[in-house]
Image 1 (cartoon, one colour):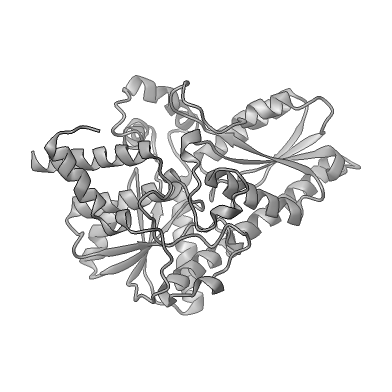
Image 2: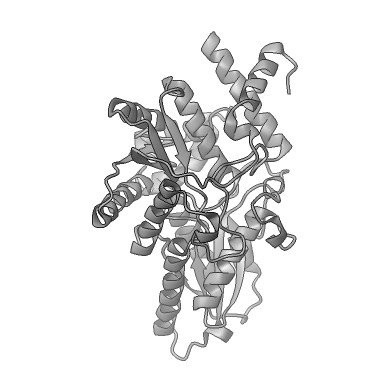
Length: 401
């Protein structure tokens, strides 16, 4: 990191933020929330949006448009439209309906990290409506840098950009991979996938003929970490892997009918020399011994909705790879707006609103419930922390320029 005095001072300012210096912790204090903020990733909704959207996703990395266009073909294939914004509209509406059903008076705002409606605009709307304390529901179930802590950084950036840091308080609901509202839809989906294969292949015996592939987004090996409230339960794996393995095991046990299963990865990016979690799903399918299985069920366990990385990386590339190797394949749906998932998200809201004691929080896995408040090193490596401080310093320098 630079020794420039301005950068040093900016880094110190970042370290003084409460969420950055405090140890990771559970919040068992009741809070009066004015609204819920559905916090999404965002996606383009037309061909003209694709490159500007990808610039937002990769901002700060200096990637030229020519290279971004190499990635853009995924979106171009679908006429430049990612399904994620429409899925978030549907999720927002489902949350509103569930709140109404329970008689809970909480408006639901929606803001994205990388595209309209933007997070800063959502915060401006909140301020204009007189809201002062908001609970954010991130559209990511797992604890990791990109799936959890980066959302907190986006919130901090948006508060700084809008000048609302002293007026709005935004809490973030805990990662919910262990919650029954997240796990139940996958159990039902896997049962449905095996039933579909039975219709396609008469006499199918799942224990002998089916391989279940639980798919999630790959991350750099250095980001997997040993963070979390129950590090003793990690079983020697990094926390990122351990969370996915725990969910996969629970889903397979409940619905897999004895079929063998594996955790595989997808959507890797970044420089070729940097090691990322493996095996890649396409490599795994290609290397399966011939005759080991007649069919595979792909369970996108790392995702909450059927967005672009599911439609392209799984429904297009992985399905094609399976076909090339003579395997019948079914890709099952993500939670989306499944009633159990929507209800579970509202349960998370009430958990924070009511200050539910940790011992009473819903969790189906030994790894949960997860922390409410990130600590200084939660989901981070030293490399990531240095990069974040440098980013904060650049923001302060730009603001002073």
